[in-house]
Length: 423
Ligand SMILES: Cc1ncc(COP(=O)(O)O)c(C=O)c1O
Image 1 (cartoon, rainbow, N blue to C red):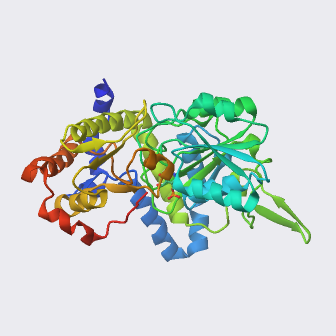
Image 2: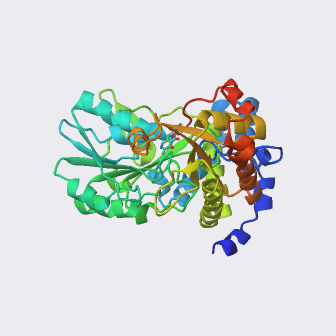
Image 3: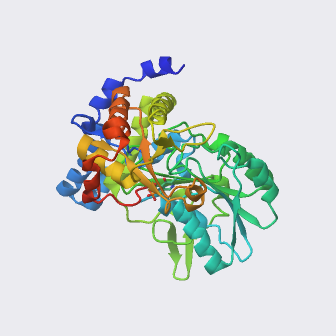
């Protein structure tokens, strides 16, 4: 199962395209920031060089085709219309633009999952304090995903928004996004899907999912530049979702006392932007499409299942992943060392990149699991079975070396200053 499709993905080619794969590094932190493929690096470098050569504004004019290509490419990735895409500098920025365009009023209710991303939870609490809105956490089903029946029962006439992280930052769960979409549509409620961890990893079709707004970041499974992202807003909602912040990109000053908000998702953008990075994100979307997101998803599933099994088999190690459909994220803890120590040790001693998922990232979710920190391993299609084995062998040293005791080298792990949370 899955092998046929995997054979169709040219892994050697994927790796040859990726300068970061050329050395000793084993990069298993793709849910943090992936390694960029050459076409993305080249697109960014080319535009920066052009800016040096002819000037920033002049370079943007000369690259107008590549800039408009960004909208086409991202739209194609999620089966949308280019006029529905806004370029933003992070997923969180796009997400806040979407949230604030709802013009929330006191008493408005927001339904969200227990595994919602930290920044969203903070914003919901902030909205409660400032706007007197109400946030309701929908219960999970036994597999940890959002309970759609409970969600529908919680809908009231005050429900203004359903907000869901498609793939949480610290669990393998793939949420039933389309089922949630059917509930949102049946009740005419705005539905904001955070596709930060799913864009580029798995096929996304906004019309199938039935969301109203979708946000994603560039640097993760899409393999784009840092400081990039996009917001998609269903064009049927543009008039109802009026942006909170306007400038000369999103509106036109037509008379001294009048302005007009522009048509299309340009209304959610600001004039100034990192053009090289935007072109780079367009190149990343093209690259993802060229490799086939379907095959990428299948390959990631196979590699993640292998990694999950190898780690679960190690004595003293606990895999915490839930979800009946699982993503490329694998989370685990070890009885004899902290997540930061393990991540630091893997980086320093084995050149293996993983990351720490801390309680600060999804407090509601992690505390329920009875842990405060997890090691997060996240595989992409360019990773190999050998790399997974390299990780498993390294962890095996912890599990069995010195009778499962902490090796001396682990004690220095704090030296490299692993942040306590890296999203
Ligand atoms: C599920 C999820 N949502 C949102 C974000 C935020 O993305 P950004 O850092 O681009 O704002 C992340 C980043 O880790 C994430 O994992």
